[in-house]
Image 1 (cartoon, rainbow, N blue to C red):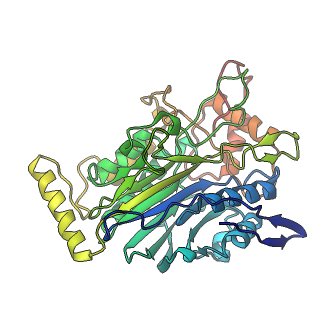
Image 2 (cartoon, one colour):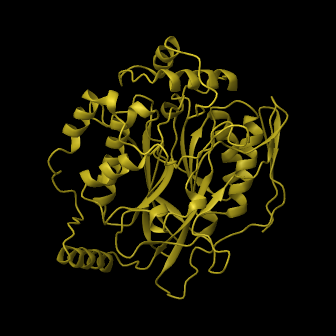
Image 3 (cartoon, rainbow, N blue to C red):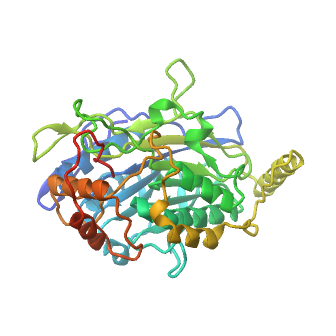
Length: 432
């Protein structure tokens, strides 16, 4: 499929180069009642002003090559929103977005591939309740759409960019718990994808709080934790051979096990089959500052397929009930609806975490890339230099300060800088 079109924005030209689309069929299955839907989630790093437009252009081209049915984007800013919409909307329908969301500086977008016969039947932006443990102090929200696929299956898709920073772990865990509850209370298949800034310990707490051990499925774990997909965020000097570095699995994809929904390999079976395709590892853009080639984002996108075997809601409910009955007989407690939280969970646990936040994370395995103690500097879309960001991150990593949750990001960074010390060259400090 050759896609050639041109858009002019802010006096600049953004052109999609002719490419061969690597499309995975939405209904490719020997079972006539089954269908597969392909997903791509990607944090497109709209907060780094360096070559922002060319990076967004390159990311759009990568999306068009893969032609996923549903696209989850995070860290979109107004200038890159224009680029993504102009390049994708001839084939895709963009979910809801309004000025109130744009005022946050950066936000999420959802796209549905209309040309494949899919249609949005429900679209809503959900704010984490003010005053609750999940309240966001960084303008984060939850975007939910219900899509009627060409196969007539209806699926709910959730896109979110959860709270950043290590000390926001209790808030982030509460946000994930809230989303899991919503997914489990739906009478249809549901999928959550996004930059969740998640660590395994937080994911496990959210699953335990919702009694969802055998209902919420993590794609990475489902596929046996493939080593090549163990990290989706790359530190600034990841490619520097002289410095010790690592990757973190901040970006994740889940489904709610409703009916016969399941993850399937992203590529056809064979010796080179990959259950998850990581997108954006190729250096496609030239940095305006350094002149070096760079990736479209500091995150790698995740391309995954979801298989839906049953498009009859009544049969799906019976199938889910049958699964739960079998699991209950084997000793597992898997309620399809949210039950009362077990003792020492929920808000009590989060309040306990707040009181003990200075010690939070000490039990984490620092050698695990997705459980490493991390710091992420976030602010509005205003331009900041890479040097400034690294200086702030270095100061934060050295001082090890855990300020109060209600402080603004700017004040948090200011406090960290006031305790800055000289950082050892052997210490890993380029953390997000």
